[in-house]
Image (cartoon, rainbow, N blue to C red):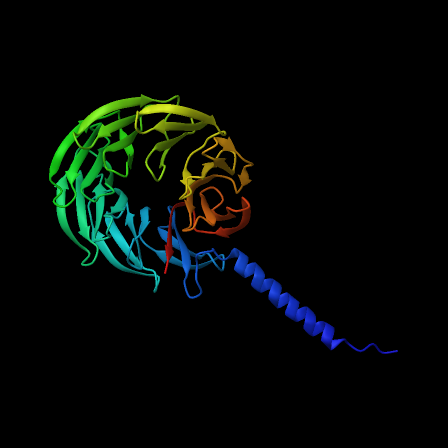
Length: 373
């Protein structure tokens, strides 16, 4: 007896399969992302001088863009459909048009730039050129340098205050911090700090800056109004990352050497707590409501979620061989973690603390910028 296919049953299976695929796609789509909007992650690959563009809805790499040797300082422009970054070896800033995935400008800034920051309104970009002891301001619309100033020896990072009035620059070889007028780049003062200053966190009211030392276990606290050193906070290990609570009340400092996380009360300038969290905690990402902090641990190959208000660690998320840079998408739905050892980007659903997938990148991925457009 010859069996006849049940076409109704087959059609029903196809329909159910289609609905299932749609539901999975909707679940993976970030909650705030309306139809027609795109969200991409741009990952700088240190060893190939390229940028990998990753579609965070399709969860796939969609382009590899040459940007120049030593890509670093990769940032999403706050108002334009652009990603900006630096070529540290080439000595220039580059601008990527995200709609076309093309480099549309290269702006010479001086030797060995490492970090880039935008004014709050997105009108200007600021770059410290470590190899030429200079700081430059770039008009983001004309892409021309509109101000230039001398800094101390080997300026490392330039950060704009939240009110857009000050530019704070760490001078690594001088062990000083320069405070400049953001509009003119004229000097407002120079403050001696702990040796080889590097990273900077500025409070929302622009009253203080916290500055890590690259050669000691100290974090310097600088009064930006009076331009004086308030304190050098001594930790139990060298600081690796500064993560500031959105309201500015607490500063979280990861330390691989101390295997943990220091909590600083930014009003009293005191270390108020310490959490032992792993083998080598390095970089972190904090949710907008300050409820969860995610910290990478390259030695352990995982990311540690922390309920920061309760000071409680939850189960680590395995992501690869050497995870480091962490970024949260707008809405905090997805955590992205670049793994320089396995050359991929881990995509994690924060609601369930589960790994969705690993997306291949170029060799030695480091910086991550996220753009919705």
